[in-house]
Length: 297
Ligand SMILES: N[C@@H](CCC(=O)N[C@@H](CSC=O)C(=O)NCC(=O)O)C(=O)O
Image 1 (spheres, protein in one colour):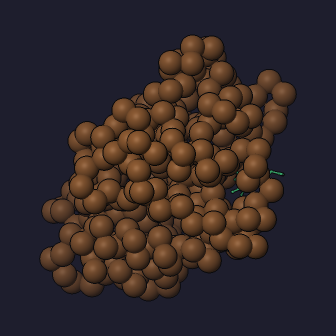
Image 2 (cartoon, rainbow, N blue to C red; image 1 turned 90 degrees about the horizontal axis):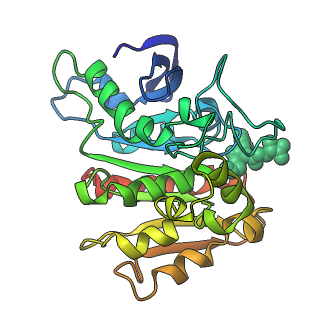
C-alpha cells in the first residue's frame, strides 16, 4: 500500500511526514502523520520501535503532532511516533445526523461498526491495529527493515483515544501486539457514560454483549494479564469531563479481584484539565515508560 507524502516538516532533530493512503478497512483515503526521529537519519543498523498515539474527539492527526511535544521525546529515546486519524472522512461517509462533535466524523471510537450506515466505513479497529501497521511497515521498510511498526511497538492515546489505546492493547494482548499501553484522561468505561453509550449504540447497535467486547472495564475480566504488564494513566482533577465521561475510579474498581489488580497505575494530577497543556506536561513520563518497555533504556 503506497503512501502519498503531502508535507514534510523539520521538527526537533527529525521530520514530521504528513501522509495519506487508500485504506481497505475504511474504504476511504486516510491521513496519518509519522514523526521520524533523528536516529532515523543517522547511519545505524538499530531498528527503531514505534509508538502509536490515538487522538480524542474532534481531532485529526494534526492536534497531537502540533501540541503534545512527542517529538522531543522521540529524539531523546529513539522511537517513531504514529498519529492516525480519528475516523474515516470524505464524501459519502456517514456522520452524526445532528452533526454533533461526539459521534461520526472525528469520533470513530476505534471500533469496527456493525450498524448501518456506519458499518460501510467505520472500521477503525481493523484500520489502526491491523491495516495501518502493516501498510507502514511495507512502505518504510522496502529497502530493508529500519523501523518496527509491527512487533516492538507501544500504544497510547487521549480521551476517546485513551479508550482506543487501552481497548486495543487488551484485545490484542493474546498475540502480544503492544509492548506497553498508557493513556491521558481516557474514557475507561464507555458502556456507562454518555459519550460511550452514544457511540456504541450508533456503531454496534443495542446488543450490550457487543459493547462489552470493547469496554476496558469488561475486558480486564476476560483478558489475563501477563507478568509485569502495567497500564499507565494520568487524569487531571480540573478535567471538565472527569465525573461524567472519564470515571477513572471505574477501571481501578473493575481490576480488583482480576489479574489486573494493582496493575492500573492511575495518577490523579492536581489542577490539570483535559487539554494539550495537560497532555504535554505528562508526555515525558509516558515516553519514559514506553521507552523502558521497548528496550530503549
Ligand atoms: N470541540 C469540543 C471539545 C472537544 C474536545 O475537548 N476534544 C478533545 C478530546 S475529548 C475526548 O475524546 C480534544 O483533544 N480536542 C482537540 C484539542 O486540540 O484540544 C468543544 O467545542 O467543546
